[in-house]
Image (cartoon, rainbow, N blue to C red; front, side):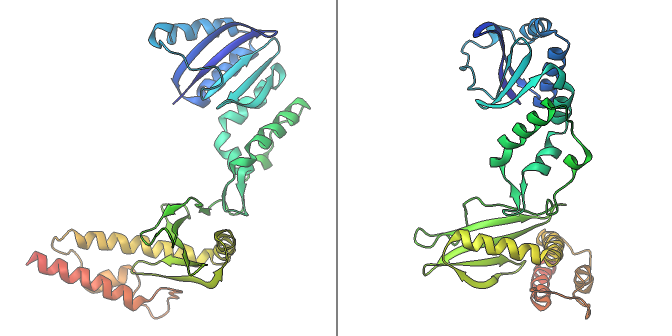
Amino acid sequence: MQDGYILRKKGTLIEDYIYFENVNTNEFIDRVLVKFKDKLVDELLLELKKEYPVHMTTVFPQFLSTDYTFVIGKSNLTIYEYGKKLCIVKEDTVSQWRNVFKNQEVLEKHYLYDDEILNINYKKRPNMYRDMEKKFNQGGALTVSDFEEPKHMNLLLSNEHVVDVWHRYDKPSYVKNLSLGSGMTVKFILAKEYSKWRIYIQLPYIRKRALFEEFTSEKKAMEALRKWIIQEEEHLRELASISLQYNKLVDELKEKTCTIHTLNEYYDMLDLRSTQKNWWILDPDELKKNIQEYYNRNVSAAV
């Protein structure tokens, strides 16, 4: 939920304003755009003054220091987001901008997803809205291609410095989670050891080296990891699926209630008795061993 101002200006003077808060952003923007197009700004301000009376907020934040500020002039509407200009809307481009804000999430995925970082690159955002403004002012509109999903959109690799349990001041270690959609994730760990960066992957039972190269910087390690992820996407999806199922089975066995399946049935849920399955970097014997340990604990607790 967002807050902000609507300012009505004449030249450089502010004729009227209203402070609003706790609004649904996209619905509110659409409401403002419609009133602006229909030349019903005065009506809008009166409506909002009833919905957000002054006495309910005794201290107002400064203009442009809120989530959104709408500055309405004679023939255009300027929208600011977190104090920075997002776009200028003209009366004859309102319908195009309504389409943008109604489909904002999809459009931002298309324009902001960056294959080089396997994530949304918000640094591209100002250019996205600037280009749309130019297109609309020249009579253009959104097309089917604007809604196309990027090739690797289903791969989202975090790049924050989330410290791992291995982390030490002189030996930094950071978690990099890869989201593959449908609740599936793979956890990587970048760890610096003896001035070199190494990349590990978290398996259901242990973590092991993912790439055996060593890197002189975290940046170079991340570049190599991204390339490897694209190369091994199908294997990583299979790993994530197996890990998800494995964790589900382990959680069931950890409940220490009487087991509802035999040990072999648990094995079969992960195809652990299959001789045809390609386990890639997983060791099916280790998976069997861990499941058997949890199974035995469960049986002992139920006796």
